Length: 403
Image (tube, rainbow, N blue to C red; front, top):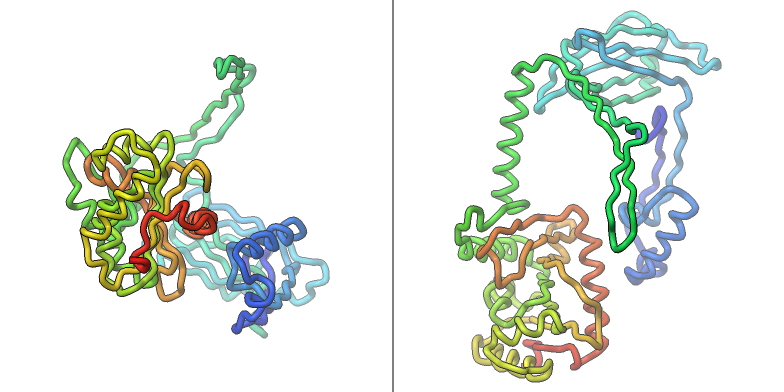
């Protein structure tokens, strides 16, 4: 049973485990994306987020036995559950209820009455401020009629209300812009510390530590501290942990030194390492200054970069390709990313936003953050990479395999 909308639906799914459809129909990411968009125009399903379901056959049967409405009791020790049955249901006495609530991984309350369900049911679980779950089922055949999971608005909440005739005006690009303002209506109760507050605070602190330990989100250079060494060590840890099938860098100011401090530290022999930089009006001066050359052009800069790659390492068991976006090929970009095309056993990608260029890691304040939608960033990197690769030597800075 899938509790997606209304009372949920019964799902019968035949799973295509071989996924041969990818070889025949979706043999390129671009083709898959276009097909997914056309399907999304017809039905509200986005296959780009559920690729594992492509090729499956799914039957969905909406549950129409009943509808419900639930709310918390006034003293927050349980719930009020109102049921409206379909007129064709003749065996309502066979249905029963299981109710429970959880908090912090613990079962905080449980309710399973022996008496028949009524149209209005008062359910006592001890505390309804947590996540509340209700299962209505047939005792004779264990058929689930409804699965409800929700939490209630607490004693402190805010309502957004549009203020009458309150306008803020600003002059933006020589045009007058009017912003219709909204007011917050806040209902509050007397503040006091209960066990929820203490547990939530502890969970927040633990989560903050966990994210930092996993390098999911971590900041450097706070209060002017030089974190250069730590930042580079963390990047290398990520490459060691996630780079078994390859690692990519996307940064408009990359040069040979940045790659030797990062991707060159990949421990895995001959895995694909890719990097994209940019040489244009905004980055040209910085690139030339870093190499100590004046009035250089793209070709001269590339020659100097190649020379450094050849002498600074023996490039043993290295499969690195370094390409440059220039005015003739590719498109301008600004953000900096560290990408892993296959970061785990499920072959899922992982992407980190660097928050600064590699040459500035740890020197000033920035935040290294793992992104929630890595496939989107990886697709954009691959699109740019394909365009630069199609340009051949005009965008190639260095390829270790050609050395």
